[in-house]
Length: 507
Ligand code: BG6
Picture 1 (cartoon, helix red, strand yellow):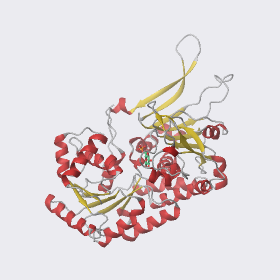
Picture 2 (tube, protein in one colour):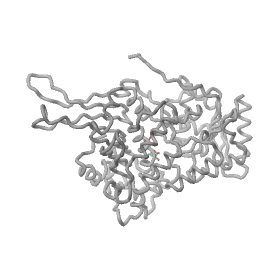
Picture 3 (cartoon, protein in one colour):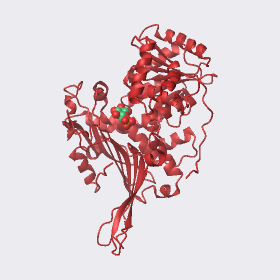
Picture 4 (cartoon, helix red, strand yellow):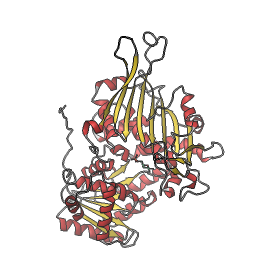
């Protein structure tokens, strides 16, 4: 089918310089540099011509060393294979500055930016990407402002600041981070990033729901029995224990990625495709989620951490407590399961089951929408017919499938469940999906906030998980369950869904 419909981007973005704070860190290596390369790469060419990328970090490094490292990281992590001619174009606009932690660091940053802009003949449009620990956000913004590096929002050239999740550690710290941001920046200059919103399949939730008549008509308590969202990772904590052990799965995944996904899945139709309309519609979902008080959390949540086991490749792996950097008195969970309700007209009474964890059986994230059973009248009078279900596979093997009943061909009347399947790989080809960071970086350059969480959403989502973390912070009252690495999680999570009369669907 070549009946394509393009929803136009507003205006092609003007050239800019993207400054990556923390340019030698994990995020820059694995995600940002490869994503920027992909935006420049020949054939893609989405990044405005002549734009530059400036790495800004504490570490001393020559420009050659930085370019070489960037080449190595991109070779390892990029979606598109590195093409040396394209790399040369990209590397030409790649620069590096050390001294992020030094007193004169920001004065040097200013001089460096001016030199880059002069040499490339581009205007002073700047994107400051704070890929640094959350506690450094306030200081960086303060120093940018003091150095005169933030333009007024209505100035002809933009200054945009991108901040990574988590925004804060709880509601008070999120409020404080948002306060520091708006002290020096207008909301229109702030981009709070949640990379799940950049994933193709998450973006497709809106298209699936609002450009196909059949789904939206079925979407709600009249027809849906329950919904499951699973975000399973095969990897363990790796080298990130210093960060992860303070966060745990609830703060690392549920407060942000999962609540964002849930809101897109369940929101009302926005009044337009405008960023404010979509953000408002999402926020309204959060406002109607049944508050999870500590008492409610006790019966409706499970927390667990992985013990030793066998990973997806059949390799023996250590339990969380034996991972490098995990303190002996750790209280972090690596797995969360919970049951929640959205108390609005559309979703009243429909349970939502959420689970996410590290070191699970395999990497698989999906949304499973199970529809109500057909009446027990004709074919299923004496036996149970499996219900229809829509599974949206977020990653890997992106796509969706629909389980329906059919008559098996033959002279006997035999009913058989079949799966209608759309695989992105088959339909659109391998590597067709840009990485979430590519989409989101481009949106920052375009000044488009549609796929970025608002301050209110972030604050409301902290409020929602607060009851759970309050309960869990008292370790004596809620035991930490354990699951073997390489499994689908603890028995307690199975029990949680079983007592609600359902079972987990393999994602
Ligand atoms: C990050 C979390 O936000 O998302 C990580 O901090 C997690 O702990 C990662 O591994 C998962 O992202 P993805 O895109 O691999 O599903």
